[in-house]
Length: 230
Image (cartoon, rainbow, N blue to C red):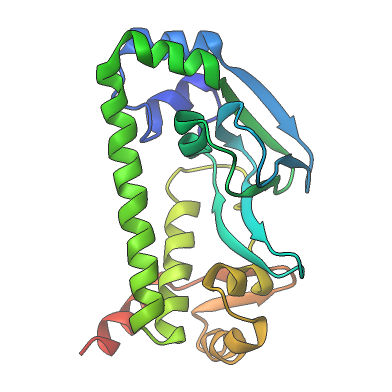
């Protein structure tokens, strides 16, 4: 877990390659923010005020329509950043974000961040690399939705969550994801994934608990994907 501002800057992919003096400047302009479980940080349509990094806890990123149906974009774990697109282009937020458990964030104000980047335009290339990576990931998810059966999409999503949960060693419990949220991250109903999850639970690949789906045997899910490709 990135337990301090400097660990967040040193370990994360967004600022890892920045010069040390620039990281010091970022640390000087940043603050920490504490959120309670379920507390909303910002809503879809809000004007961007800052870039955020998760120090502990987690952040859920969702979109919701007028009928209450929602889509889960993802769960931001300790060590990761979010809100960078709006922080750079200045357009309104595209998701609603809320805390999972007691969460501590690092906050870099947008105005100060842009001023720092404008004094050294070469630093923008780091954001460009991150945005290109996000664009590729979004394209991959769209391709999976178009070509893969639900069981494969579900396995890939569980493996992505497992990877993000274990990217940083942390004494804090990993952020939970319910069956409803897992289904929402794929744009399907809970009922549509129930039988697949039940089968994998019987095989001891996963554990389905109240409010959480835990990956026990990620290698078995990976093998399932590999075998089904042949």
